[in-house]
Length: 377
Image 1 (cartoon, rainbow, N blue to C red):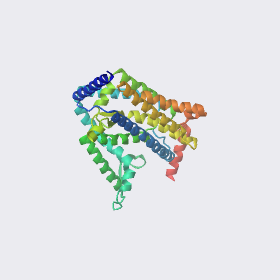
Image 2: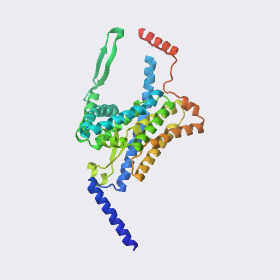
Image 3: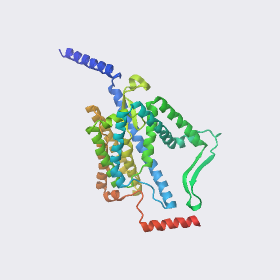
Image 4: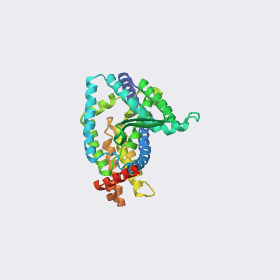
């Protein structure tokens, strides 16, 4: 009797699978395929944060040197900008939703794809330039070029374009343009991910919050933004599924059955990588300011992000419904350093740390005068 019941259950499951495949035109994902897809997304998410954070440390040092030379403070996100960012994101999201409702999805995606084609090439060039330059044959010289476009004359002149490059950069541009053309023509998921990873690493490296309170305001605001638009409406899910541009990482769940031509994708938005990533990168710079042997705040929060992302994937699979990843990532990324700082007695240092401390007006004017004096001499 038990064996007959099991046979009926297996047959029913097979019938349901066949019906799903007939309706959707997709091969149902196996457990192995889903594990591979989710695992790949997690790896593609944590690697840009790790490498982008260390690149951000180098970028921060370059900013400090530039600040000493020019006397000008680098641009960083203020608390006011962090507070209004979720509202700006909401307006953008609704705008895209309306566009997809009014115009054909293919038409909107063609325009956006052309825009992200150029952005993707630039992001990929910035990331791969050192690697490609090291692979360029010695027969190609590293001849320097300088494009300069200024407004005004003499002391009142202002640089509008001031770009230096060499022949190796041109080779890099050609290589990255081939990837861009592949993406533009085929929309292949590998090309999408190459651009997406480049965007993520560049975002973590170049986008800075100046201090921990600003990062907390930004992430808390985006937590409510993410939860509202995913659970409260269909806007986020509709745009994510319609938006065929490289601002999300994808991996096919049916790759074991269909190979590189697979089409049943799991996805993760770049916002769920870059936004927690810039906060984690800030913690690495805070670790460096403490001059200790281990980067305990960075690695602890990095691991917490990994666990939060893993929890997101598990809950999404269990409930078979899209999840606002920031709902799980934000508490993990904010709670970990705060609890750790409480345990280590670093809470005051954590919340008082600034990448670029605000210079009092009088001191700033003195520094500017010294810079101008050096230029004159």
